[in-house]
Length: 490
Ligand SMILES: Nc1ncnc2c1ncn2[C@@H]1O[C@H](COP(=O)(O)OP(=O)(O)OP(=O)(O)O)[C@@H](O)[C@H]1O
Ligand SMILES: [Mg+2]
Image (tube, rainbow, N blue to C red):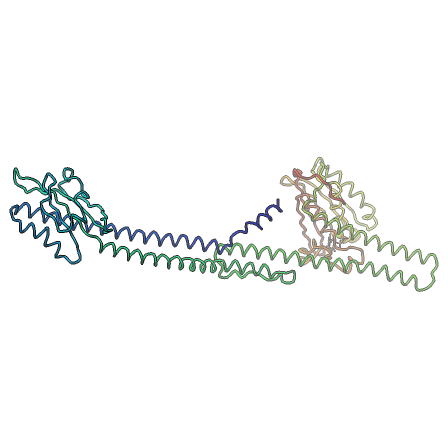
């Protein structure tokens, strides 16, 4: 699947964001300019047509007036039909008057060749009002606006006339052609401006994205402290930059912890290995008796056990951290399990002169991994025993609270300073470093308890008062989650 998409990418390289934005901007801006200029051109043509029609209608009214008021005045008619059109310099108008039967009465000289009578509607179909004109292009290529109207003399029993008027639009055609030429120039320039403007806007728009990319590219394990400058970023990218910076915070934190952890491992391994080496060197420095060799080997074995326990604990923590790790839950009688753990530590407690009290309501059950549960409670009891002086008490209690299982291990020991409490779950952290290391604690116990609680979906909380004692509370959900199946190796 992944391969196929990579292959597709190679053949159909996606457009860059800048290219997309440029095209979108250029297309939309150009469409806007095109629509605006198109509309203006249409408005101009329509206005010219309307003005021409009005001009023709005016002419019709003048002719009508002459025909109505002075029907016998041939000179006046000639003036309107032949002289007046010829006298015009810019507006070339041609007029033809026909009688009802379609016979020619008078026409502007030359009109017969340019705008023949057949161009106009049939005389019988001509209306009284001039209406709107139509376009006509003559054989010579000239354009005319033509219009026909009926013009009665106004007297009873007298015949009607058909008036045919044509307006030469050569002038307007030239004007419109010039206007179109200018429009094409404007549109060409607009296209270039839109494309360049769009590209500039796109570049400006994606500049913050490029800055984010550059920052991301710069980041190495040594520059994890770098952050994306959020000031001045647009709102949409602010969320991305914040998320990215938060991710870097988490990465920096995890990376820092990982480096400290590796340094701690090296440091913690060095002590027992140095001890082993020192003891072996001292033993080999001169011949020894069998008892002396036995004592050295015994001490070496102790160091080896300590080492192997530490490695086991580290392995456990590494496995527990794997998100695919599942635990093997089974319904447990909590009181019974706690009794077993207490029994296990009874001898050590006796030896130290500390009493372990167990109080648990009968019949409390929970879906837990037996081995992990015992290990967590065992670690807490070990801690309590290690920090409680002779004559002290370690209390073990369990019960239900708000639908979850609550297991409490409290002691009357030396307690933990408030400043240490936030760190005691860190690996290799020991509040009383000198004392614990001499006693063999490596500082992994509470980290393991915490990861066991979390593997069960539970929590751990510690309260302590120096000189009075410590209470650790574990909470586990009583019902198992649906996916728990594969056992983690313990
Ligand atoms: N009940 C307690 N009373 C006082 N201090 C405690 C108690 N439990 C834990 N601590 C402090 O917290 C530190 C961390 O405990 P944790 O169990 O993680 O390590 P550890 O006991 O030193 O070593 P490990 O458990 O790996 O053998 C201990 O070193 C100790 O200083
Ligand atoms: Mg411990």
